[in-house]
Image (cartoon, rainbow, N blue to C red; front, side, top):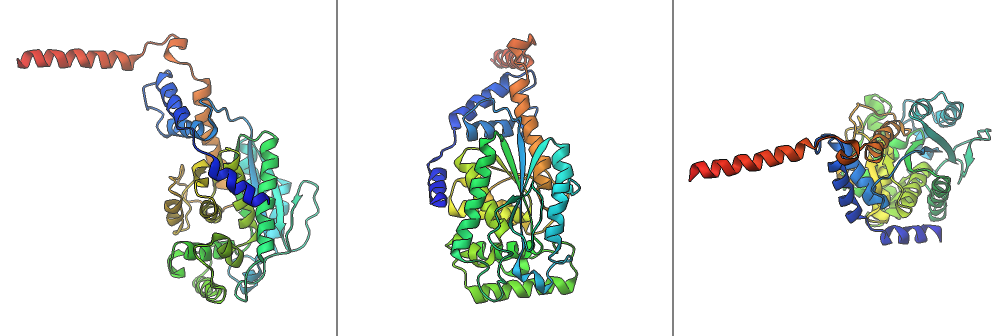
Length: 370
């Protein structure tokens, strides 16, 4: 089975710490003061640890957006009706959505996948991996069957591996699914043993009445489904969405193939946490793009043990934050790949001269003391 094989590959993979140390030494030889590029240097070292290449040159970037609907969305948990999922999918393909514009601006390709949209979107550019037209209403039972869950995760694995085989050096993941902050909050409540009140945010700027409805629906879903906290697949099947499951598969595929992957905001982060729980170590291949405006996102980053690269008060999702961060990561890769060393560039190594002068000064001070 593809899922089991991918999990096994993730568990077998180890980071290349020696290569990371080589990248650190390379950074110290570049024509700049040591550590002067701060986190950009740390990023290049992490890229080396992930890929086993001291100079991992990111040229081809790809954004993947998984789109799917939620059965409980009919309860009115969002400021937008369920049909917006389909409408936004068309906008991605047309190139007029924020995700499309930001991806294009940053030189990234965009792959849009229908993994569970209600209704059809006729466009040859759309990848069709529809499991079903939306999940079931999780206030009445599981969101999906175990078979549907595995199919959704494996769709994410196979489509991501296709993109990697086509030459993608880094991938950013995003989603579209009206109501999916509710599903993500439910998952987070179970994984982190939080009360729904602690993790539910306003999502699409819903009012107090809708906020209370979200909390009530999550409580109902957890009570009815009784998810098994220590079994992430069980939790995801009962409370998740097809687009979240697709991203889980994508995260697993990136880790199995040693391909850096950028986590977007709130919904992408819950998929990343699920992937980590399914295959521990998976998170080592991830970069956290930004700190979402959703209050509970900070808990997610703590669970992933990742520091966000950006803090722009963003809360859109759709891989918008991940696309921006991916450009930053690419810049870090270009620095270590294309900058001269002091020796090759014919530049005097001021750091070494300063160290030498400091040693002479220390010796003089010791002599004076005697």
